[in-house]
Image 1 (cartoon, rainbow, N blue to C red):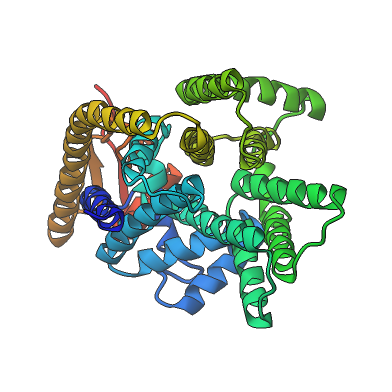
Image 2: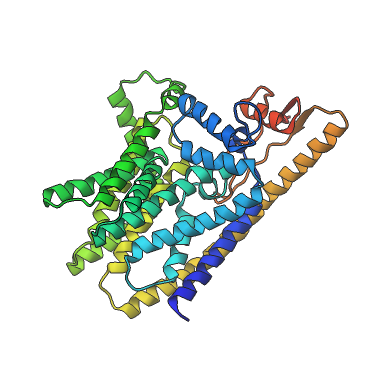
Length: 434
């Protein structure tokens, strides 16, 4: 069977695996809040844009992500389930293309990339299944990877493109920079490093490269200078001297990195050691993506909050780093093939068990949510306006609701109020523990 057919089959299987999980993932937490605009529920693109203007000046600069989120929340979730599984599949293919570098196809790389993401992403479900989380991490990261793939190709060709393509690439650059804080920052620094090297070599940038780089800078600046970032930041009160505060955060982030990136770093070090042992030249792309990795990690020292799902881009950079190193390592092709096949077979056994547990975990949560909705509907018909339920949680990090909250005991809790507003009832809260 030709490599292209194998690639299509593998990507289709990945799509089905993710689509199944999307189908049993209900709306969770922030999803209920973002279904509303300034004047009730979102019903049109105008409502979304008006809310995003308010959002930019009062909460944060991630407008691209939240435009996606509110668009999907305005429509039937089945649309999101299909497109989100497709976006995840596309992301894997884009990572694969960066690793492959236009060389021989290795379709099984796609499976290994998926396994890497499945087992090492700290909050897999939050980043790739939860509607609001996916729009903030999966969708924005995929936009950034599309930009990177195109930038790498035009850099290798270094030819001139017409004005329309130059403008379109500049617009794509704006979207790629306007993603989320650490993803945008890492892309900016990778591109600045590229520009710096070009200057040292006294080489000129092409028009389309300049358009893309300027676009990324514009998008990143628009996101970072959002007045809402500073208003929201004031909610985290900390009088510690700023340098000392950043140093404490840097130490905390380093400790967390050893937990989340420990095994990927070991794989990376082993591959680098083999390169030194064999006296093999390291691919120059490794240096750029390593810069991206470091910046994506430590740019978060300026943020008072560093959720687990924000580590998603670091895992992707680790996949690219390890993938490029392995793909270019000078060993016999037959040996490389056996290593890939053995890895896929061994990890597949672990994956099947993990997937079954995740599916059961997610379905139990989904089923309970449907029962909760039916209870509310039935109660409303009987004139009941106040509800109490047992809070629900999931145990697998691949489940969308893992690490997220549910209902809380107080009726005045903001999340509870959002649920009550969404279901059109007076109040809803978690049943107090006896």
